Image (cartoon, rainbow, N blue to C red; front, side):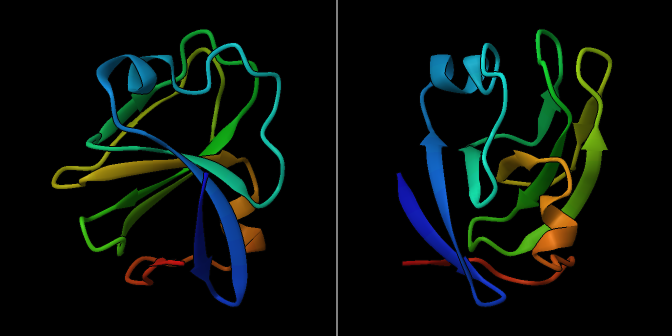
Length: 110
């Protein structure tokens, strides 16, 4: 678990860097707590097959700068992508708004 800062908030982020950890993602989990997320890297697209809950997906470049935000991506049927993204940070639906995230903002690794 890594700690990241943005807009005065500290987030605990799990990093999925291997093929299998990225493939598994959040499948099988029933929820994700506020202030926590899963960073899939490298990754520029996600699917929601076998997911149980909606998520916000924050697409990042290699410097952790936000390139795109996909809000409230639906379980089972949702898909999302961002051309040129390096990573996809998955968080519970509503977290992007709660944290006041916007394109161009940058996460800082603690």
